[in-house]
Image (tube, rainbow, N blue to C red; front, top):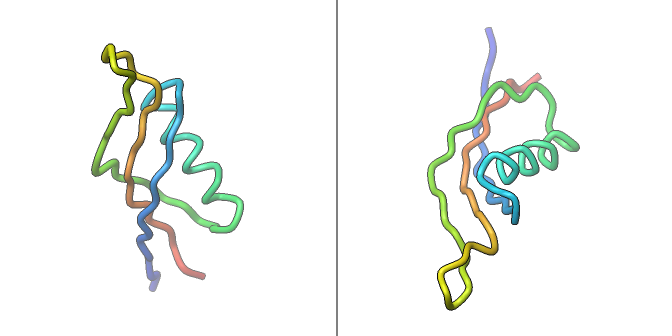
Length: 67
């Protein structure tokens, strides 16, 4: 039998969505073992007055198996 837990995290990157996801997963992996996947639930951008994107933000749920 295995039990999984899901946590919700937010992360950001000036480079893009993929980098924001990777940075969030890397940070969580420092303290959580057995990460099995993630769902990106929200994507947001921060912009300058001219509409230029300065930062990508994601909210995601990460699931991992509890030992």
